[in-house]
Length: 283
Image 1 (tube, helix red, strand yellow):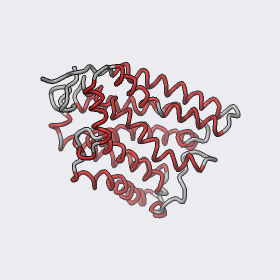
Image 2 (cartoon, helix red, strand yellow):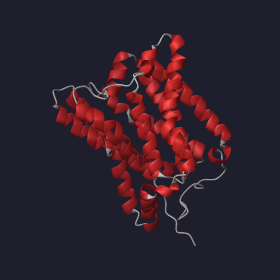
Image 3 (cartoon, one colour):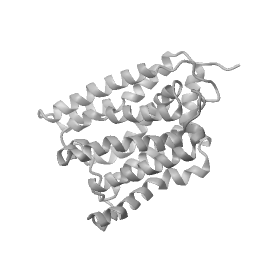
Image 4 (cartoon, one colour):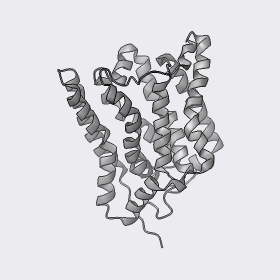
């Protein structure tokens, strides 16, 4: 006999957006009205916790022990990760960036992009945040996204549909960051709106690849966190231009389409909830 629980995707994303957008738009206001670095950073940090806070609220108010055990198992059990996927998790993004750099050379970009930056440049004026964000942000996000959000959509839709929907929601979730002065997303928009649009588009193929790894590794949050962190760190470590990041998006999109075509059994299965925990199945 299996115990079931009911995921609440609408409630999860509504609360997550409410927490994050209120705090991030507050950070944006302070960033343009003389707020200190500490004040802006504090509001940014609170917003980053939105997915995790919401996931924990819904998990622990569900009164479902299997759901809590499932969350813990996904987070702490390294055996969920299949060894064959470890090289992909660690080396995929560096390879994509290097390929994209070489593709960009005939388009006028420099070979110097293969160099590595001396320091990350997420936000101006805060060396500490620039080092913390590339590692901490992916972990905090995935604790909410992989901990509850992705599976909540999967309980209602096929993997492909839930992945595309999540990718769109995840992209829009970042919207307030484009108004936080001197932050990465703000600088993208100031340089060229095309680069800002590219960020939103890039989230979709990246979501497809991340979710594919998540499900192929038995819904391991560790796999999702490490892959997400490698993506962010590599994007900042290489001296790639924002134009080349557009090339990266194209390369990611081609690979994402190829993965879907090669793994139709996962993405185009006819049911819902098929990839959830062996402990239970969503109602």
